[in-house]
Length: 407
Image 1 (tube, one colour):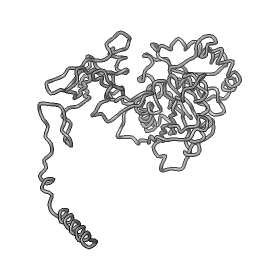
Image 2 (cartoon, helix red, strand yellow; image 1 turned 120 degrees about the vertical axis):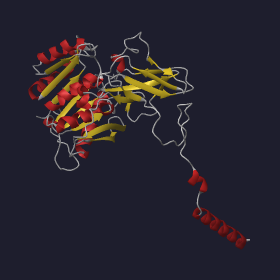
Image 3 (cartoon, helix red, strand yellow; image 1 turned 90 degrees about the horizontal axis):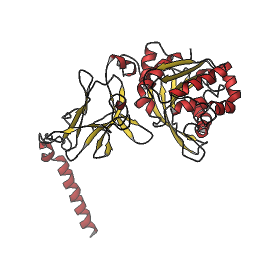
């Protein structure tokens, strides 16, 4: 019996060897799948060019969006970014998105009724009530909850934040570190400038924090901080620097608020900064360290940057301020808590940059916040722009702020 089994296995192996050596007529004759003109659906394993563009910029900067969804009953284009230009859910009471129309192949499309300014935007499709990212998309942006697709409208006014083949580019890494303060692994994004891998010098560091609806991915995926810096460094307008983009959120617990979050401060000071100084060629002096943030990140900066002159000498606050009185975000409560540190900051800060849009819903916080700075004799540069609480402003604030650092 043993010999019989051995012969059988040997014969099987010989047969397999012969089959591999023989031509594969089925595979050899397989033709690339062809598109069916009656439907927008591409067949499995189709490797040709996409039969349509999901996002297309027209010559006048209007944008056309397309989605293949033959079985859908309703498809809307949604974008909180475009809604600042073309109302769709903002202001409240406007339609939740741009209604798309379906052709006979099942392809839905819509063109914006007016040009979209050159910049970067997030968007999604709402298919029968369900949010769907662009299936043909290549760029995406993580938010606090979920993700969006992104697109860029090309034009001269947006070139400052566009990828430029003529300049050297830095690298963006996603890192994880252990936070002893929070007892958990934490994530951050880190930009290193062009040349970082080729030299041995130490670099100044900017800690750049996102807003309440975003994540540590946002300053690069939609904010384009890395591309803005690449272009500024290439033109000699900004110093090469490391940029660390922390997770501005921490696990929810009683007594911790979005705008006044001591857990974020502990993680930043006790865990993230030591991690960066250990694992990157950072200049660990306070005069070579900056902190900035937008909205919630601006609040983190007011509480953990401006009040830590021992750690940060360069501060940027975008679209965030303090209110009148002694509420939790009021100037009186803030001043009483950080009085000694603010007095020291007045003596040691190199730069305090404060920016706000005239249409920002937080514009009323400008006067009390600047009043606090003046009360403590903290010199500051104020940039008041048009627009509101939106990424087009924050990219431009960053582009104005970064060249002023570490000079």
